[in-house]
Each structure stands twice: as C-alpha cells, then as structure tokens.
Image 1 (cartoon, rainbow, N blue to C red):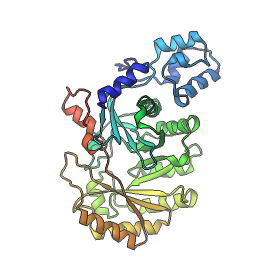
Image 2: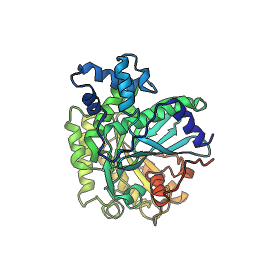
Image 3: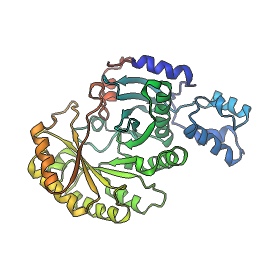
Image 4: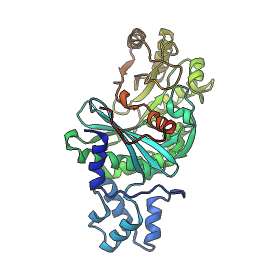
Length: 379
C-alpha cells in the first residue's frame, strides 16, 4: 500500500487540524487550563488518560467529560500537536518513516517491526542535534529546538493510530526507543515527562523503553540520583573506546570521557544493573575508522572494566552524505569475534529502512534540500 493511501486512511478517521503556528507552542495542559479556568484537577487527568491510553480518535469520543467541554476542545485544541507531512514505507513493509511538522520545523519518527511480530517506535526528542557526530545526518543540521513532551507522546499516539487503521500490519507497539533526532539527555525534563506518561497510561513496562545518549556525563550522573527518573534502559553511543578515534568522530568527546564513562557505568551497574536492566553500548561500524582489532580490544577492555551488565550492539553504517562507509563484512566479523573471545555479549543490529532514508535525520535533511517533495512511497 502506498504511503499516500496509508495517510488517507488515518486522515479520514482522525480529527487532525492544521496546527503549524507562528507563535511558540503552548503545551496542551496550559491550553486546557486557559480554556477552562477553575476546572477541577481530575478533569485534566481524564483528558490526559484519554489522549494517551484510550486510543480515541477525536475529542467527541471523550465521553467522560461534558459535551460542552468536548465541543470547545474540538474547536480550540488540535487533536495532535504536529502535522504529518510525509510518510514512507520500506519495500518489505517492515519499516515506516514519517516527517512531522511543528512551528519550529520538521522532525522524524520511525515505526519498525520487531522480532516478536510487534512494533518498535523510534522517537525524536529534538529538531536537529548539537552533539555534532560527524557521521550523522541529524548532527549536520545543528541544534534547532527541543521537543515538548506533547510532541514526544504524540509520536506514540500517531503510530498507534497508524497500526490500528492499517489492520494488515497487525501487532501493537511493544517498545519505544529514544534513538531518533536529537540528544535525549539534552532535553531531560521533556524526555522524563514523556516516559513517565507512557508508563502511566500505556501497557509499556520500563524495560520496554530505551533512552540512547551520546554520553552526556553530568546528566547521566543526575539520572542515577533523580527519584523521578523512570527505571528504563539506557544505551550509550560509544562508537569508539579509543580516545583519539572517538574525538575524531564525536565532536563532544574529550580526553577523559572514557574514564568518566567507566566510572558512571560502574555506578549504574551497582544501582540498576541486572539482566533486565543491562547497559547497552552502541557502536556504529565505520570502515577503517573504528573497526580494527585494536578498536575491538579497547572496547572489550572498557566493557570488562564496568562489569557483566554491559552488552554491545554493532550498527551497520547507513550511509549519509559523508566521507564514511560501512565496515566490510570481513572487518565486521573480526570485530565481533574479538569481542566474543573476550567474553563480551555482542549483537549486530538488523539494517532496516535503508531504502526510505530511515537513518536518523536523513528524511528531514532530504526535504530541506528539496522543498517540493510530496507525500510518496518507495515500494
């Protein structure tokens, strides 16, 4: 099914209104309080639960609030906080990518089928990113804006509607990963708020949500002591355990980063580490940059210094407009074998959605270069 048909199924049944505005976004709760001053607190709780947990499709379906209130909300508050402007479908139908528009620009969200037959959504937390990783399409955009928790939550809601209105997809959203555009820990308050709302109102458990970070050490330390930070999984984009190599490819790295990461990893393992709460090291494989046996040995040493709760996930590089290429199959296998010989648990991420620019930031970067891109599908 073409993406224009997929979108039309959603737009026919969901009360979407144009919401791209020139002014700064006003959070839904603030809008509600302004519309209904003096309303008892439980009213907003009813609205919030209905928005996130009930799979409703328009304000009229909120039968737990008065009709006059539903009518006012329908006229004054958009059902979704963003406007979907493009959705792409991979050739084999296991990956979908959406470009979503808000007042500050566009961001991306991805739906991927997982090995359990359910769906994982990859959500964005920012427009652009200030971390400056040299191989990343989003990094080339620079930082533009944080996403309010409404925008993060609505990515879940959008894909939930999408699955329900395209019944041939089957399954449900079983996992959420913060691995889209942006550095989640640079938008800590909104990411934390969004996760807590997902845990409160959906059937997702803490170990079904993963927050990925390039390694913002002060914030990583903060979350260990924050009683309101939910016990979700954490993944660190290490990309190299060699100081010089990491500084070359990760702009925000510094000489003492790996030592600081080791100390934090040990503290994480003591406080949260177990088989269900393992720490993941993500490692994008760049040909003849970070994929040598020397690099594998250094990564193994870092993992072993932290302890047994660390797993390594090797990521085939999804080429962007950069000088990098994905590692050769020979280097990939040698790297994995070296890690395994050191007793490190290692997996290789399945490459999904390469035909629809599913890597972080690729679609929005393409749209920025080609303003007249229309809603389309690659089939």
